[in-house]
Length: 95
Image (cartoon, rainbow, N blue to C red; front, side, top):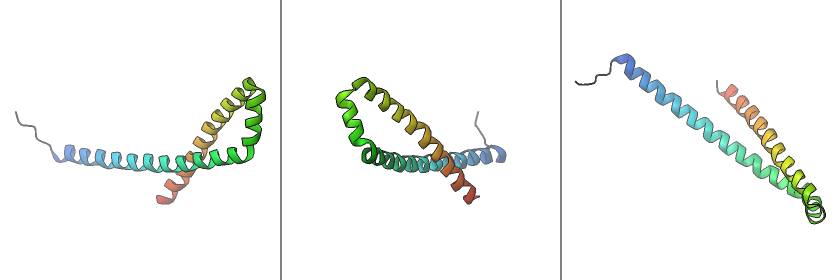
């Protein structure tokens, strides 16, 4: 039995390909934006908190561990929200 694709099936396949391409582009854009923000965050923390964190690590190891974990959680939450906001603004402009 030979499989035949009618016009609607072919159209569905083309639409799925377009949607996959849009999703891939959105993911790549989000990855680039998030990478830039992570690097900026790293240098900001290094500049403003580096010396204090180094002292804290030397003198109060457990407190340093807690602060480091809180900084990582804060980074994840804040940068994800900023990335989402930026992507909404970019997508809104494109439509």
